[in-house]
Image (tube, rainbow, N blue to C red; front, side, top):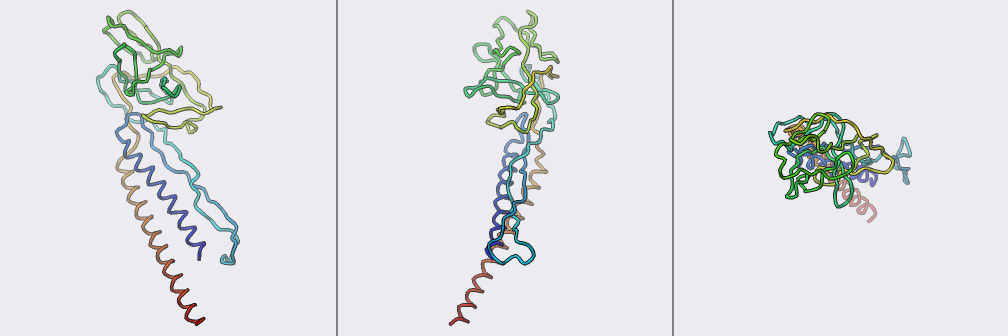
Length: 246
């Protein structure tokens, strides 16, 4: 039955995509601020063009509809690096990249040679006016208050820009822990709750992901066995039919 093979293959494709997401989660288990993803499946009904379905004329396929990102806050880990920052709650830091403004939970920042506060990828971190943040060479103190104010021995020199989104699921991951927003998804400036000398760790549980990978691999192998069995059955049926016709 071709329909059996089509349905099995649709499930295999879904499992393959799910395995890819699990592998990506595991690859980012040590990435600061990373949020795990999982697939979102729906049922796709297709009208049967044969008389193989005795009870219904609809075939149910697995449809890989998209992904759902887990935005649960990761644990905070102390680094004692004054340029490492973490945010409590749903807010994001705002950075300027060569591709435009991006958003991140990865607060592993540093000062470049020009005294500019940048990400690990050297993208400028923006203040609440949309400008890069500079620390003068003679300013040796660097403190960040809970509300995102950057304070040196000369006082407040800048305030971090942080935003929240109407729907975080609409954010699109790019690279290096960055996200881009989509049109129509409001980004609202908010007063943050910042922890200095801390980073937010990935919210991926490596043990859970490894267990999921094993289960997915077994499911994939079981479906492959079913496909092989169905293929053999079809070949045997064709041989019997050929002999009977001869």
